Each structure stands twice: as structure tokens, then as C-alpha cells.
Image (cartoon, rainbow, N blue to C red; front, side, top):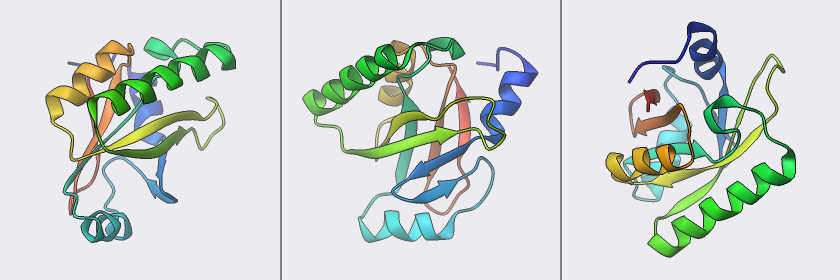
Length: 135
């Protein structure tokens, strides 16, 4: 899939994705995060949120309710995850809470991203830079 427009694509690429205190950026290596993954025996990760479907801002209580349903879904499926967040370093978008799935199947991650009406998810593999997958 392709980004809906170039301005939005740039916002996703410029975002900072925080997982367990590590700040990840698209197309940049993150050796400390890779070491963290390695110590825990994980090779793959996927970052997603339930906030702001299709980049349409929602009131905080609605976003929090969506996040809660995402957590319930992951817990029911027994999918390992840690808390994550995405933020805009320029301040144009508020921080979005989310999750970092550990060793997910790409298909499951994409399906969950689509379920929560996201334009894209962040995918990564230990030793490589994270990238965006447009849904």
C-alpha cells in the first residue's frame, strides 16, 4: 500500500517511536534497542496504535478506550508486547500511546493495524533499521 499523501508520509517518517525508553526513528539503526531485543530473545518487532484512526484526531477518552480494547485483544490472543508511544518532534501531533509487539507474525500485525484503522505500522528486525508498512 502507499501513503495517503506526502505530508502525512513525512510526519510518520519524522516521528519518534519510544519503546522501553529507547527512541526509534525510521530508517535509522538502533544498536542499544537491538541489544535489548537480543537479551530477551526477540528478533522482530512491530509498533502500532489504536489512537486517531486514519490520522483523524479523536478526543482523549475515545483514544484511551480504543487503546484499552487493543490491550484486551492482545492479551486474549496471548501476543507478547510492551508499551510504546509515537510522538511528533515538531509538536504538530499529540503523543499516541501504543504497543510494541514482540516477534509477531507480519500478517497478524497488519490485520490488527487495519482493524484499528491505521494508515501504517512500524516494523523492524533486530540488527536492521525500522521501516513503515503502509496498510
